Length: 296
Image (cartoon, rainbow, N blue to C red; front, side, top):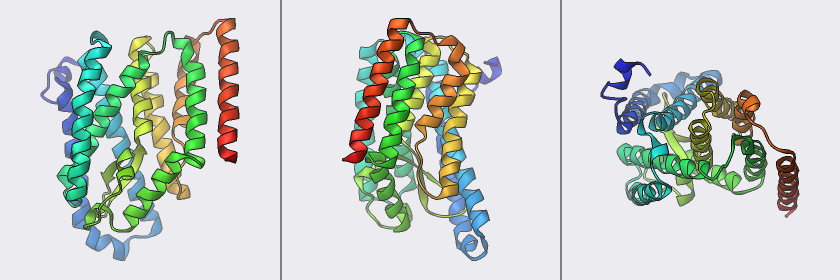
């Protein structure tokens, strides 16, 4: 990292990365409130789609930048698992407190923004803890396949589909722009303003954030090529979110993220014959389980 960047007030400490979230969130909310009265009268469908794309990409990139920045400068590998678990407790507690606060005052952008920050931090810590359970880089192959299959089921038939539906209903009812109490389930999604409306939309789920943090933790743990890996982790959710906006329905982001991440790191991932057999059995079990759950 460039020394001038590393020593700057923003990047010299992990908390500095949160300034990126605060500035982006506040700026988008301000622009949205200014333009919301005019856009409805003049905006075409294509304009609205463009605004939704830009807002979604900025929200995803901001969250990923915070997670990458945290790993980059906080040396998490030097912390014990117990230390991370102890850090997780206050982060999770504050996240829960902000949920209660937002439900009491749903029009407060500061509270919604704070809730999003601690959702990112909590996901960041959970992802790092999960990455420590991976013994060797090659194990990321079966892990990625399992993650993709489970997310495909969850978004198409499972919990993620229910969460997305509830969040969409809440947004259509006025969302955080009006005195509408948000459902608890909506807090499992990262909420972010749009550029041309006073509504706040959900763009990425907590599961996606945790897995992004998990993969980033594995980058450092196994010394995987960072530039290519970061590019894959940024491209994955960006492609998924933009596709979801175009077709007007939620799609599983983790299969896209996992495939791109594995492709750019494939030559660094190796398995023994025994591990391959075990992985195939585990993947087949997951496929059967997902198929049974879809039937149910």
